Image (cartoon, rainbow, N blue to C red; front, side, top):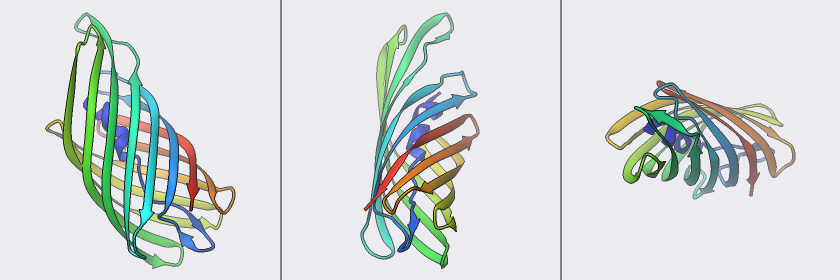
Length: 196
């Protein structure tokens, strides 16, 4: 269940290819939806992400998300869950070719889960998160990103693969969509990104 509630924290990744190459300075807003196989606790919410290039190699990235689950019945008790999550990471990237970048980042992950209805209570924890992947400029307007993300929080660890598609509508604006798959949860996002 916790994997479904914190999967949105895996959704942050670098992006953006235009005339100046891949951009690591941007703001990103998305809607997300989860599909959990564990106990069928699915969630919908939003994620806001910001990334800042510190040097030609290093960058920092952070995100915050909020989501609400559908009503679910467990052992005869019905209720729902709200989750607030955030992460702060430092990363590095390196060009393999003019159209291909490799990147990695690592940092801290926070989450608070609030139970509603028959599930009364609140729980929070601090863990860690890391990602490693590739960014490919297929053409100047289209970028593909693939990465593996790993996180450990609430005494549980989970890893998953994410594929991301960006369409650069203008020099600054992109439409973006992604799909993440882990052992118990799939996460889908759609949104927009503004590159500075």
